[in-house]
Length: 554
Image 1 (tube, helix red, strand yellow):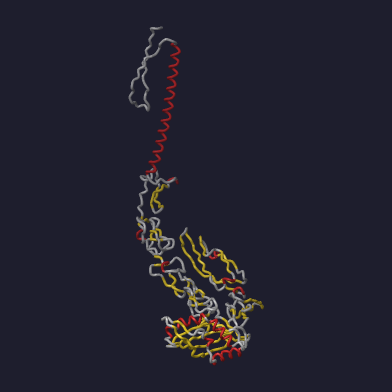
Image 2 (image 1 turned 90 degrees about the horizontal axis):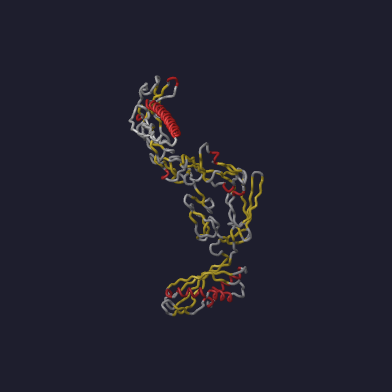
């Protein structure tokens, strides 16, 4: 996807606008802001459609930010320089001027880059940084051969150490020898010695300080070379060797001289219209064999004055200037050249490298594009099974359903009058016609007009007589009769309880009347209770009264 911008601030997009429906998640976020800093740097985006916490489907793609106008903020930063840009209609020109003490590699102090519209910059989007330069020094190199009265191999190490310790003395001796010429102070930079039978050959390298006249310095070195006295390079007359012997030392020759303005160490000598100067190797190059070499493909160097290049990371290539690495098509994406027009690996494939995606093994697939590894290939659901994605983990088709294909997200339902007797059916032949009942009045009590219907793949009877509700079978009729009988018995029980209460009340009232009539006479009757067996009456008599009156006290 390509998103154009016309200003430095860019634009903001809502990724939800690219989702038709469903609950979706967004990475890196739903709202994405694209500005000048994103130009030429693709943004990886993933939109996933969810079912609960499970990903049903996902789409991964790259958003390329393209500037439709010249934007100076898209230029790489140039160190140690001041940038000044000017608009000329749709075009733009930016000049870079090095700070004091700095120069571009090649000896210039200014560089320009131009944009001709559509943010195409020439010569490059990556202007060079300015380098700290030095003025060349007048370097001197000469060899001195020393004679020993013993094998030099036993003495060379101690003798070289002694020369290094006394290098300031040797430099002062040369200054004194050439004092009338005033060539400037001589500094020894390095001393190295090697042994050859009874001789030690030592190479001295140094330079004159200051900006004294070159002819005077050349004359000084020439006089040293032809001088009959070589004591200025002989700080001692003897040296103790490693075998504890004392060896006498004399100067044999002084020669093999090299003189002239040179640069120190890894700096290169440049002669330009602004004068001679020494500069280090710029970023993107390394110093070797007295020259600056471009970093090879797959290597880079982001710092100046370096002797080696660094390795780019995995899936990266060197930038055109060698000062950085740029990413190839990111994992999950590929293209013909592995760099431009990167497209996600299609569904049912996985990423190998920036130029190749490989198809999943047979029987495997993916729920999204841009899969990074072979492990992202999932087994498809086998016939008789399904899942929300069509891939593992899968569930068996429920009762009265089947699935004869693999990799499906649902199961097929049997006909309304068919059913299965197990889950995980794989063929329509497993859908069996359901048993149909005989819907006559023996099943539908009191119903003359019944018929068979199906619900959830099960057959049952309904009654259509007088458009009453349905009685599916005689069990329903029996249930209705039972309810009526229970209600009747409840009513009888209530009536009986009321009758008993009335009878007890009458008997109690009669007894109280008789007691008042007799006064204090003992009229206590003889009551005999006899057991009464069950009768046909719904209730039983409470007892039998045998009353006899005693009138002796009357």
